[in-house]
Image (cartoon, rainbow, N blue to C red; front, side, top):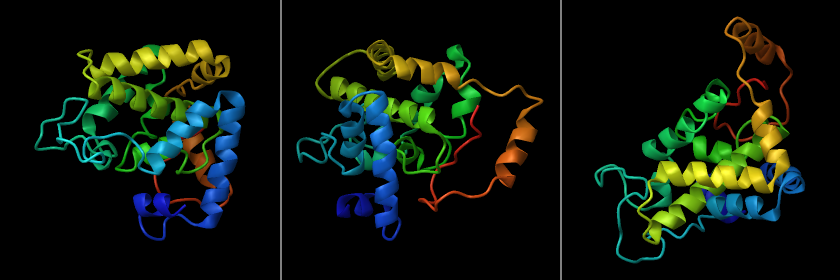
Length: 209
């Protein structure tokens, strides 16, 4: 818990947040495997094998950012524009871009995928954890010398996960964008909804569609 608190910022992760995170992680584990949950915990506890963490020769961003924008460091990946661009880019073909554009806005979008944002539904938690796994898999491949682009590696990992976990495929299919005419009404309904248990003030949870 102390490691997560240090990562997200002082005072932003309390016991109540940990209990809520554990509840959401148990639901993800039930719908998939422990592997997706441990991947999220690796990110939150800063256990990703980056060159800066291992104190080896520090290299550039695994997803191709210019060295002036960031190195192979988890702090950079928390805000990496290339990684966010690639994650967003996986969804237009499936018609999911409007469902996820809100989740991937802001500087804390990676933490939102790790279920440290507003409660946005069990299906979205599952997809968010799967995207974290895609990041870890693609990063590891690039770190160990793969010449395949990060964009291709991310998409390939997501396809692999959907074959392994039928509920993940169902979750992706269920996250369809709202018709343009329905979006304002849905936003108003979300604004009128009673608030749930207070969570970390990070990320933006879009309407459940």
